[in-house]
Amino acid sequence: MPSTSLDYIPFNKPYLVGNELRYIAEAAALGKLSGNGIFTQRCQDFFQREYGFTRALLTNSGTAALEMAALLLDLQPGDEVILPSFTFTSTANAFLLRGATLRFADSSPDHPNIAPAEIARLITPKTRAVVVVHYAGVACDIAAILPLIEQHNLVLIEDAAQAIESYHLTRRLGSIGHLAAFSFHETKNISAGEGGLLAINDSQFADRAEIIWEKGTNRAAFFRGETAKYQWVDIGSSFLPSEMTAAFLWAQLEQRQRILQRRLQQWTTYEQAFAPLAGIGLQLPFIPAYASAHNGHIFYLICRSVEERQQLIQHLADQNILAVFHYQPLHSSPYFHPRYAGPALGQAENYAQRLVRLPLYFELSEQQQTRIINCVLNFYTT
Ligand SMILES: *Cc1c(COP(=O)(O)O)cnc(C)c1O
Image 1 (cartoon, protein in one colour):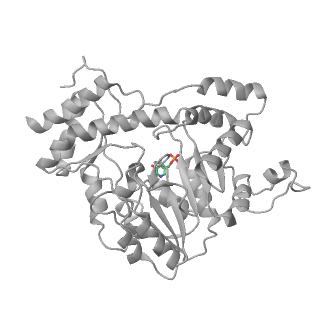
Image 2: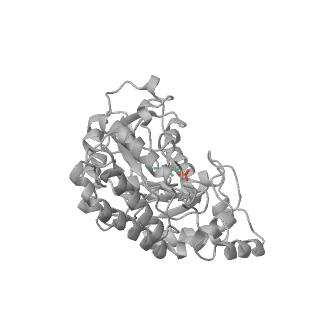
Image 3: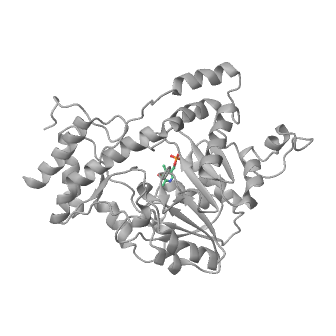
């Protein structure tokens, strides 16, 4: 029976953390609300300076950033792109929209990230790019992946949508691939409601990225005084967010340390509380040593069966707590299944069936988290 006396704890809750509304008012007062104004510049400069990206371009979403990356590849018919099956649709759609042939890879047995051996299995003379997803903000096995990229002269794209402020050893995620996409969707650590960022780490893509971003024009260069005319010079689309989005984002970026610390604290509290469950066969998140500086984006448990997971989700729902599963593998989705000719991807299916995510967000109180923990432990001890 749902207990009406208990506050509802959502899975995620968007929050204001500082100057969001003040900066939006400032942007309005400045009289320029379209893209590439002062707040956009401030955010992009921040990412270029602090993250060391050659170029950082704000976008309307993480999806849009992935679409820009796909446009920059200039894919030809028959070109293949390798990506994990256990990911969000945008990782795949961006490349499919450009006519690529998708090659789906399985996850590792010990965590949901792409298995490097799978990349090796899928490389052919037609492979152009590999897209890796740092699931839950936990770094992929970059040291095993980079040699494959170099050896076969491929483009590495990081889907770093969940990975802001995470590292592989001492390298920031998003700064390793030729290109990387971040998301500022309200479910991500740093949010602008909807928003994203394309990070360009290989300068051969920088100028063209800016043109694609500005609807195929050299508008950005024109306003910097670098060209006498403002013209249509390439294909492109409308990828820039408005200044209101950038203003909101800037306020969250200013508070990024506070947000990160809070999330890591909640993540660690879950990890410690649920450590005993490993003794009865549940899996806790496995964080490889190279990924230890992660951002606490998702805390998940891997149940022993799909039935157990559904019962746990129901048990929490009965106590007014929303826990959720995650991706259904793309290779076996209603859209792609009829087009898929590869082998079964057992690990992707495994995470799809058994993984459950617990509430984790800036405003989750200690008291609420204790309630969630007790509810889960109670499910396993009665
Ligand atoms: C959130 C997410 C996206 C899409 O980002 P949007 O900003 O929602 O478009 C893409 N890939 C992954 C792995 C994500 O988690």
